[in-house]
Amino acid sequence: MMNPTNSLPLYSDGVSLNEQELIACQSLSRAIPDRQSRAKAALSGHRSSQIKGRGMEFAEVRHYQNGDDVRTIDWRVTARTGVAHTKLFVEERERPILLLIDLSHSLYFGSQLLLQSVQVAHLATTLGWNAINHGDRLGALIASESTHLELKPRSRRQGILQLTSGLIDVHQQQLNQINQLSPDPGHMFKACQRLQRIAKPGSLIWIITDGQHINQQCLAPLTELSRHCDIGAFVVTDPLRQGTLALPKQFSLPVRDGQQQLTLTRQSYEAWLSTQQQQLQQFVSLMNMIKVQPKFIDAAKPLSAQLDILR
Image (cartoon, rainbow, N blue to C red; front, side, top):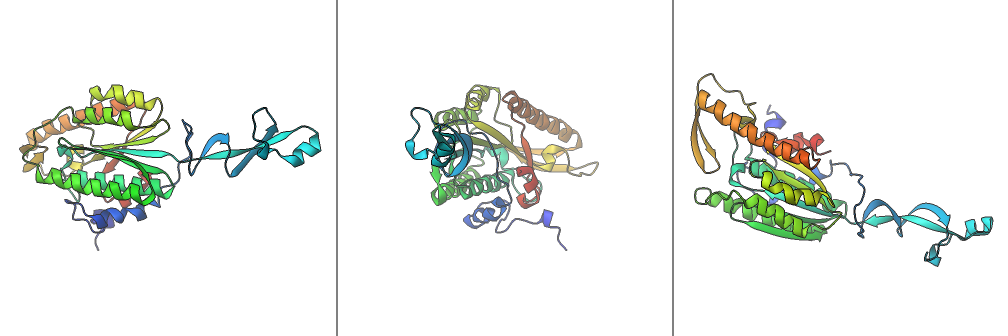
């Protein structure tokens, strides 16, 4: 019997993307528990905040103050105490969710099951479904060496449809141009700058990446974002890049790393692996500077087997 942790996700071939496999991520999103977080800015909508105001859920009664809406006066308490009291309610909030999605060429890599870029798309779509299921507005910035697709936060079906369509289009462009594009070492810095301009105070930002292109240059815009937004990060990894893939003592392994075509032997693999892990540690250190602890998702396992990491 096939181990479900080694099975391709529904409708997926592990290399390309299609609409059906991203729609199927809706079922995964229902397994993510609701997050309780403190709102950082005044927004209106469906998410319950810890700021008291006018809403549907009763919070407490306090003495009436000048400027309070007379419609909120609690007449029973006022009659009982002889002092005017007003009701307070938990204000409802609709929170913008923004995904910074890295689809750089380094993510078109996979030693088992899925390309890292495909797992990025599955993760982004699952987080997107979760956002709209909770009534939040969903937006994204999909970044690659040649494309910066900006999707403004939108509600309900519009938000998820623009995300899935954008992911499929950019992913296919990158596959088609894998041998043609020149490296752009600053493309993720430009994406962070764009994100800084479009993220409104109180937004929740998820960074989804392999960590190779978000460098020290990105620290300034990310630091500024962290002052008025909540930020989380997911790193999508591969066993060959993590050093967890079982390999024979001697081997000759053809590997495409971004635009580089390599042949890894036991000796050259150790040096290559050291570089990969150093780049990853630099990203983790950068995230720690803005008080973010990245979570790791393995491209060699379906996302359905890793949902506990999303909690």
